[in-house]
Image 1 (cartoon, rainbow, N blue to C red):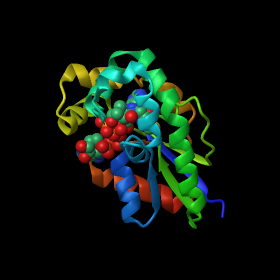
Image 2: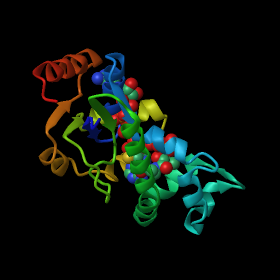
Image 3: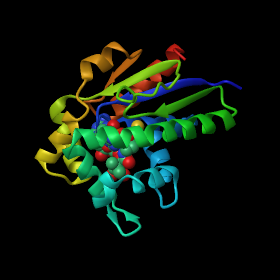
Length: 196
Ligand SMILES: CC(C)(COP(=O)(O)OP(=O)(O)OC[C@H]1O[C@@H](n2cnc3c(N)ncnc32)[C@H](O)[C@@H]1O)[C@@H](O)C(=O)NCCC(=O)NCCS
Ligand SMILES: Nc1ncnc2c1ncn2[C@@H]1O[C@H](COP(=O)(O)OP(=O)(O)OP(=O)(O)O)[C@@H](O)[C@H]1O
């Protein structure tokens, strides 16, 4: 079985995971690249080992323990470190996602890849759904969900600010600036249209 691959991507805190939860409730298989990475950065995992062996990331370790908050602060403050982490981790994330898809018996699989357009590696797919939200809505959701400051929220947003390019290269764009009910309606319309 070679299922059709539908990528869900978008700006940070736009509502990708919320959309994916709706799809899961409808019975679809949804793979989340962030969750895949969480497994790979657990002690002994492929990405944990790659990060541990690079001295640039030593400040993020407390003995053997990887402190994800410290790692996030390191990469969001330094683009070079972010690129290095991406180089170490993305190929492993893709490999793991491919292996989950290979084992599935579904005719379509949704894959949430927040950094789809930023990854150097190519991830073959059939359709790309882009989730967006108005900037002020995005900032407020990020601050509320993660309990972070306005400055840090803006820094996180700036690090992946290429919205126009993302729009040009996507097949379907969902604006999730309104409530969750509106988001549900939007995805139902898209599913009914049978675009994939
Ligand atoms: C920095 C880490 C430790 C933070 O972990 P944490 O559990 O707090 O956050 P989580 O993984 O859920 O990521 C939340 C969001 O942060 C943003 N983000 C994460 N990593 C990056 C990155 N390297 N560059 C830009 N944005 C990123 C994305 O929007 C992502 O959806 C973790 O995200 C990580 O190891 N990142 C590198 C791997 C990666 O690129 N993951 C994204 C897969 S597409
Ligand atoms: N339509 C909506 N109305 C109100 N709140 C929403 C809506 N969509 C998402 N949210 C809330 O906004 C926050 C961000 O949404 P979510 O976590 O789904 O975004 P994300 O794009 O997956 O984030 P990340 O890029 O960090 O992975 C969450 O707290 C979520 O509950």
